[in-house]
Structure formats: C-alpha cells, structure tokens
Length: 315
Image (cartoon, rainbow, N blue to C red; front, side, top):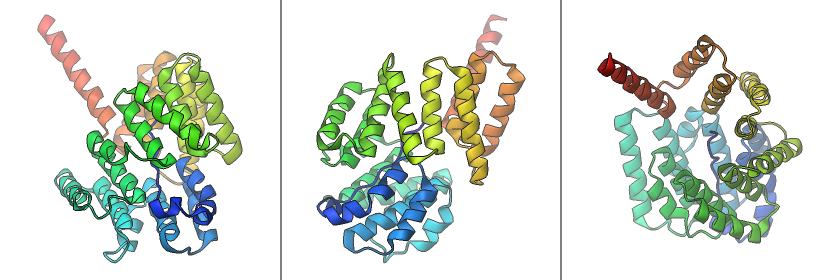
C-alpha cells in the first residue's frame, strides 16, 4: 500500500565520521518523512564543508521536492551546483513535467549516468536511482545501487527488490544492513518493509517497529500510512481508518495535499468495512482531483471498463 521512501548517501561522507555524525538526525528525519524537521535540522547545522555540505543541501532540496515545493529546487539549483544537486533538480522537473518533457529529463539523466565520471559517487547513484524509480525504470535503478555497501544503497536496493517480488534477495540485503548497523533508523525501516511483504506474524512486528519510530521521532504522513498498512493487513480496519484520519489531519495542518496512499488506504478500509459506495466515491473524487494521472486511478478505470465490456458481451 504505502510508498517506499527515498534515501541519500555520499561516498566521501561515508568515510568522514565527523561529517556522518553531524547528519545522523537529519538523515533519520528524512527517511521518516519528517520534512519540516529536515529543514530545521539542516538550518541549525549551518554550512558544512565538502561532501557533507553537498549531502546537507541534497536533503534540503529533496525535502522540498517531497513536500511539493518544486519551484524552490528549480530556482535555487544552478549549472554551477554539484552534479548531485542538479540531479535533484532534474528529478523535480521530471515530476512536474508533461509526458513529452518527462522523457527528455530521463534522457538527460541517462547522459549523466553513462558519462561515468560520477560512477563512484554514492550520493549521485542513489539520487539518480530514485529518479529512475519515478520513471518506472526499476532495472536501471537497481543497476546503480545493487552492489552498494552502504546502508543507504542497500536500503534502496531492498525497496526495488520488494517492488519486483524478490523477497529472497531483499532478505539477503537486509541481513547485510543488520551486520553494518542494526539500530540505524534506515535498517529498522527496511526490516519493517520486508516484514510487511512477508506477512503473517511479521505484520505485527512491522507495526511495532513503525509505532516505536513514531514514539521516538513523532508522527509523519509516511509513518501513519505505514502503520495503517499493517493494521489493514491485520484486518483492524477501524483502527486503520483512525490512523489515516490522523494522516489527513496532519496534511491539512502542514497545508499540503493529502497523500495519495492516504486516499487509497482509506478507500480500502471503507470497502472492507462495507461502507456505502457513495462514501467511497467521495474519496475517489477527491483523489482524482488531487492526482488525476495516478497509476492506481488509471488501473481502477481500466478494470471498470473491462467489467462493463464483459457485461455487454453477456447481455
């Protein structure tokens, strides 16, 4: 149900313990979808040096993009900015572009990747892989991060492997993450991702993990949707609906659009609770206004057309 979360890392930053320690809280907030805290923490850190500063800025720009503030990234990042930040800008442009221009953005990314000069920069590889994911190019994304040895690259690899139903390989990478640092926020999130897909008793373990993170860091729309997913799997539909209400309220408080996962999970809850079709349709109408081209909406439309076609064939 809920979307996976983007992750960022940098080769030089990984080898610099002082730089890494400075960004620990910033990274955790980012992974958890606590974007306001990302901006606040980045501001409190001030300007850093070298790779650590590039990583700090990458979190700032990506947080703005995640919140839908695409204009900020487009205006602030220039041709003189580090290549990594230019990819963040390119990703932002891709997300807001018309279909014809989306392909142009992906072709530009291909050029940067094929150039090879950034092949050892892990921050670049992860940010580029995330853009490929937005374009549905999972194979290209996986190619960039599969052999990565950092938690960030392994975490992104797990997301992709789960998306292509390779839970076995995802478990292998999770084991490697645990060997590096089992207490890291990203390792805990990755554990929950794998547990959700495995199902059964693992759903409750995932729920415990998400709720522990919520208690430690606070609520985010991402965490609330993740908690709701676990509750839906456990058929706790009333609890899930309440959790999703919290996600909607948080979005309104933040003056941002209601998350697409919140809409989808809410409709799933209402369906299983056997609520009136009119109630579900109201949510769908709001969803369509917010994200008219969303793949889930298009899939539902295709299914309805197929059903109508079948009805006509047998009428």
